[in-house]
Image (cartoon, rainbow, N blue to C red; front, top):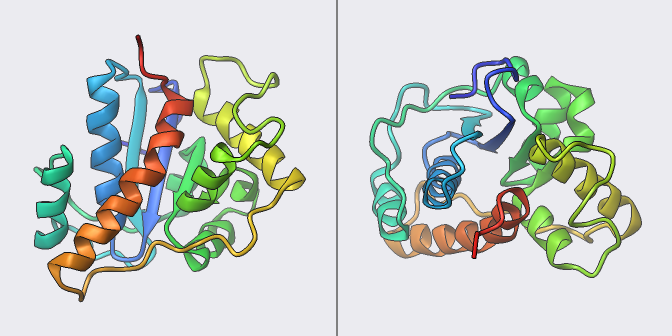
Length: 199
């Protein structure tokens, strides 16, 4: 769990949405499942909401989608986004532009290490110098290295009108499935950059 201190882990990634019951917990728990499968337990993944339903579990429909994607909603409890959580994160990935602004309002210093999830995926998929590596950060801080590389890529070739991940909270199962697929697809290049699959 991300607690406001960086010393306990090599790197920390924080996912942000609104209520912390649909999009960001799906991203967190799916990322955790992939990282565990790859044997990378040193990377901490966490989530929070700008208007969290504090203490709530994952929305039932999102939980169903998450389980289908290979993640577990068990034991999850939503929490409010705070400045200490942002300060502790090496990389912050939001679902919308509005949430990105919320993060930066809490911690202006986080602007260079905060990105929309789909923006990060687009930058990693683009043929942009520096988008996949950064010589300025040691390899034992992959989150910081990736944030620096993404920020450098954003300066060279910014993503025009990066896409928000829509909020499925009041929608039907089909919308939750669609959003889950978008999150899963966007996570793949990010996780590959943070913890490449072995073999």
